[in-house]
Length: 83
Image 1 (tube, helix red, strand yellow):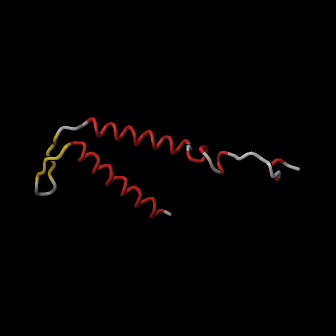
Image 2: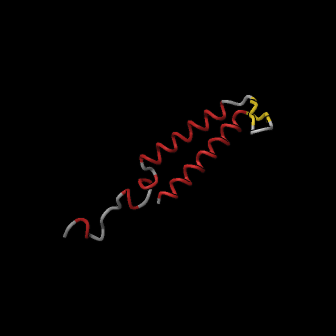
């Protein structure tokens, strides 16, 4: 009888558990997200931003976070359109 057909075989990491949650791609995305958040929250000074006509003063972290969220939404939109 082969190991694949045995009823008492051990679980492989790809079928569940911690191994399925911690893929190299997910670890890389989590690391980039963490570094991005650190970069955003280290830049706390106020900055002026011109939105076509009005000029607003916002904390730099808020402008960076907003830009990142808009970029993530655009990326998710184009990935979903590809499928």
